[in-house]
Length: 391
Image (tube, rainbow, N blue to C red; front, side, top):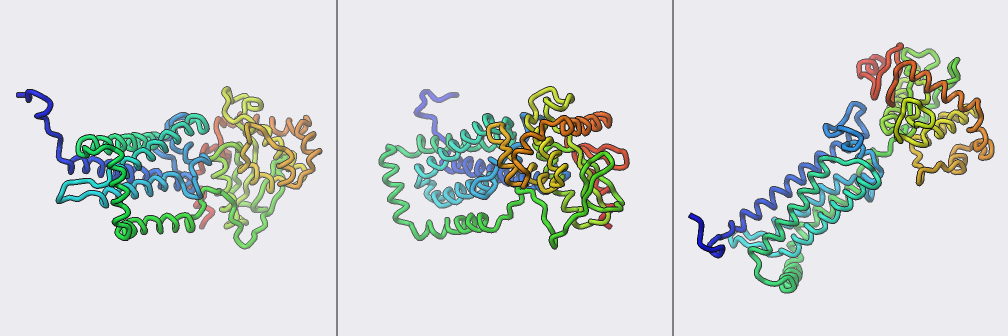
């Protein structure tokens, strides 16, 4: 039988609410931990693709590949782990099990507010700048809003003092236990500083030049630039787009592999920009501007500066959708005036169209794609092929 009035309904013990907040915090740590591992593997494992890379719009990997995934030299998901550890320490610091009392509601609530504001900011960033969403990130946003709600609910049910009084007592509490707070929080602060100092910037994909290895290079009969072995055991022809993250990741992986086996592998480069202005395969606004970057690279090849410029173009970020030819010429040593005029020459454009038509004849539909012994591999190269030259 239901009680006659609401006054007879008693809330759960405060330990139950504390337990819910604790479980939410631990779940947030686990999800952020997974996202941290996923972020690392996106940049370092050529075979990796997260389970939530479902489409262009729902894709955790796209979020990881974004420059917005790094803040103050640390991947954002690692900041998430550190944030939940902060919440966990504060929970353990504040809860008196015997008295079943939480001492610092305003501090816990403030952390919940900060977490929620960060969630809203990251959500807007995903929508406006990245144009993709990460399902696991959305899970953390939900956890953060639940943490905010639960800390507010605890205040409403177990703390009858007004907010002004609660905040005043909260400040007095922290002042009275500075030394104990230092013992709790100093390891987290020290660990954060260590991460900032010692974490390798694995997200900056670059070619590591062991012993200042100088590659053999040249051009095929079709005028395609190559590097690597003069008499190769394995020839890899890459069809690539300078605005494609996987192309960038694979290119530097292959270049480092060639550096370790310079007499076994040859890498041949062909352009296949996913730009609808140049590639008839592309119907939407996929990688606008990538075609012009290819034209610049083709001109650089004519000036025998292709491979120097090639690495730069993989890292090039167009500002507001524009290409700064002057900056590119300064970085590459190309003559600005010649560069500006040459990319519009029919000979340069014909070379790009020749590469694209070559890819279409091979039924290439995405980048990166690789041709090895007349077989096409899209996205990545089977490990058994690469292992054959590592022996």
